[in-house]
Image 1 (tube, rainbow, N blue to C red):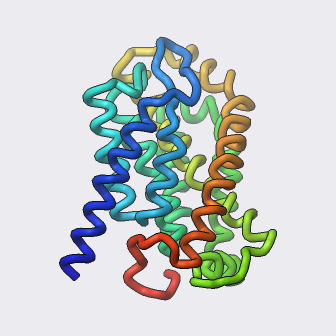
Image 2 (cartoon, helix red, strand yellow; image 1 turned 90 degrees about the vertical axis):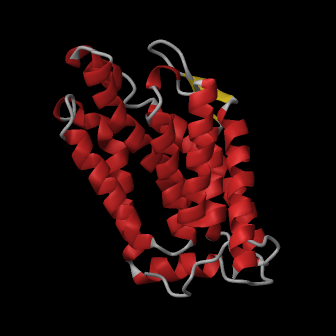
Length: 252
């Protein structure tokens, strides 16, 4: 047990470094004064998927905090949002691999409620259209046939994955990326309004201007991550990668 824990904590440190490095590589630039969304968007999800919701979340938190403190990776987003948004992504992807499906719908529901309670929440409801779709789809994870299908993906097997497997793996990336974006968007409106002093109408306009832009970015990112997760899923199901495992065998 001690050796296992040591190995898991070692993986946590290694993947924290991995996430830190990718968090400093720009994926695309932000408007409103600088900063960028980095490849940490992708690495946070991967780390959570590989290490699970506990070690993965801690690993991403360490990498994100170091990147924010020493390299200001968030720019105008400040020191908090670039930490909690990727942590949410790691949590969601880790919960799916560890079969903690019941955790995911509340993440979306809580994020949406807090968003709507914010200073521009009610006047930017259209901004949430894809998050609402993701929230509704997340409840499908509680359907027994869907749970069994996801469980089967990560069972040790010498068989090649079926074509439909890629759809379920893509959903993992989609849920994690949308949860990341929801938490980021929710925290941003509070930060920009209460800390940076943005005027509500101007802030709302900046959100609504991207109502059909961020979905393109998130869907494209989910396709990229989908290919990566398919490869990782095959390796995990064949037992080629020694990783932390769920403490129990049954989905919750």
